[in-house]
Image (cartoon, rainbow, N blue to C red; front, side, top):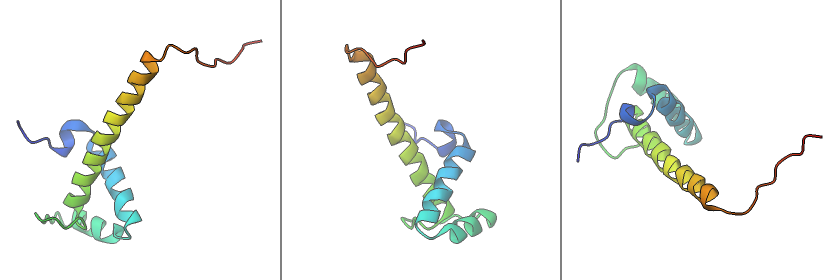
Length: 88
C-alpha cells in the first residue's frame, strides 16, 4: 500500500492551518514558522518541526473525518424523528 502524503487528502493550506494551530498550542509556533521559511526538514520523531506538525495535522484530519463519517452513518440509521423547526 502506498504511503499517503499530506496533499493527497486535504488542501495543503487546510493542513497547514491545523498544523500551525497545533504548534501554537504547544508554544512552538515560532519554531514551526522558522522551519517553514527555511524549508528545513528533519526526519525524526521531533514534532517541533514544520514537517512533524504537518504530518500530525494530516493524521488528525483523517481521524476526525472517519469519526464524522461514523456520526453521519448513525444519523442515517436512526429511525427516530428529528426535531424540525415549525414555520408558522
